[in-house]
Length: 249
Image (cartoon, rainbow, N blue to C red):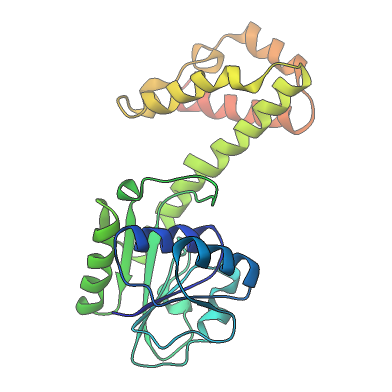
């Protein structure tokens, strides 16, 4: 099966790398950013083009959600399978006359960060049983965690991911702002962060909760509020309110 990956960003890079490492044939990288495409091409030894996508059996679109529909129009071949990698879009957003599907890897991707592809969950959806089996087979060569998922369920998967990853990372950024303001090296907090994440591998997140809000330690909560201002203060109040409500404090 000839496969073309469309895109040159973080998802496109890691998906292409996963294909190469698992000896899955990859015919071409296609996109508009020649500089990024060239870097990926040189590292992974994959042909690339900014002119037109190669004739292929499978096209995997790895671009921002807002660009998926327009990019999908560039694929004019009818007898092929096209998948997007979005967690929030339905497969029907793909605009061509080809067979439509989704191929969603649940992970946060950065080109500079090495990943264990075997651990990345893949959620797939297609129009036919045959195409489902095709995508399932490809994903299973990359990962040990592959399952089918409708768009309805995938929306909730993506929403959960935003809470578990994007929001948490934003809190890390806010925490670093506070530590930086007091000249406290942020790396001193990394063991705490690591233990917090590791703990939920063994304990339900709700059971693992600690801190002044779950203890309803009013003195500490008030002290912290006096030290904060602006958005960080608002976040602190909202988070503590949510914790108290969950534990009915």
